[in-house]
Image (cartoon, rainbow over all chains, first blue to last red):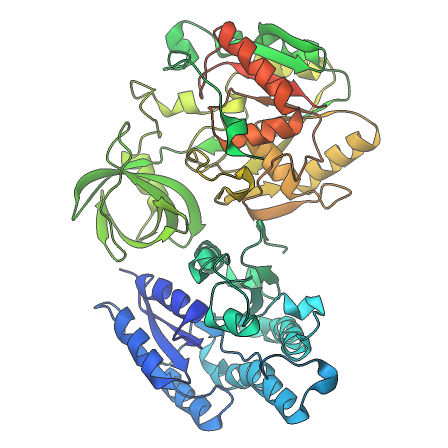
Length: 239
Length: 344
């Protein structure tokens, strides 16, 4: 089959990250999966194990420096990284307080996980990302201004702008950067955001698979700098 | 809208089972029904230009058909793999079937490796909510394999295999469809000439068709899943359409693919050049913004295309037209008769 490639998915033990991992394993990628909870991560890694792909499961918090270094070490060992999915993120304090009531340390933590960590990983892994694609997972909350979603939404809005900026800054190095709003999905995170709602009407994360299939089939540099909605009716290439 | 709105009885025998030439007809001598708010007229397709005025714009799909049905072999034995859509880098959406007339189900699994001629391919995942379609990763040149061992996709009602040329239209220029964009099937050079002579402009879009979608299986038709197809609307075509609309000229789409591409490129005010994948589903709730008329074939009961037709004209008028078509013995499917529907 095709030559083995490497993909890193932060927050890869469940929800969208796990769905993506399952797709990439069959498409011939070796994987680095990270998550904070060892049990869930180990279970996912062994579930996805196939003869054709190796899976590196790294337990840790993406905002933790030692964990970031552990990731960089595995990537350095490979010598190249084809896909970086900055997928891990936090909703912050639950239930989500309004901005006027937000504890400022907790607010800073949201930005450390959702904004600073993706930048840090991009910085650290940049030497290995030539011809690679960085995908930053965003949200409609980045545009919404929904009451209660201020911290999370602002962090995702920042991540959108960071993606666009990095795309311009890294163009000459042949590194593509995009952001993707996966849309509402039936995940633990979505349930955390709506603790009292029945979310069984939301689609499972595999609803986004056609989008990922399409995205990875595109010329990365041609889509760099774009923001996509995975569940939109039209996926447009604007260049 | 409830799925019951898409039900009607189409007599079994009203199906074109072979190309027009096999029935002793030229393509443009097949029948054409013209539906307006005044009623329904019946003529032959070569008289199409009579329905047009100077300045009208006809928008056509320039996608050409590929021989996308391939013999495949795997753990489950021999079967056919009908390719649907090229996702790039060897990834295709495809429909595994037992045969032309027998769809499935086939007991395929994630990770299964199958052989298609000299190629190997791996099954990645079924399409969400459409388990008869699979994402398949190939390890070599798929188009080369099609040219070597592929046949045009056909279904049970077409009794014999016909050459690919029967699946091309006079507008086919860009390879990529797996089923003929069949609304353009009855067009001939002479019909095109007569339209140009009348002062009708012809503009092109590209939309590569996938495999036919199945019946709507949900109660609310708006909840039906359409899968995306690649399309492209050029700057030139966008300008021709926008200018014509500004001048109050009429825009007529040749085929539901054209309507999808144009509605996907409509920004609320004008048509913009755009390319990508679209799964825009046109039904009465979302409305239609670009076209004034649609030339299309006759569509089967319970298909999502009927919802588009109800958006161009009303459900009542389409039902009335279909009653006439059945009474007059019109033929359904890709080699069948044609229908021009004016909006309103």
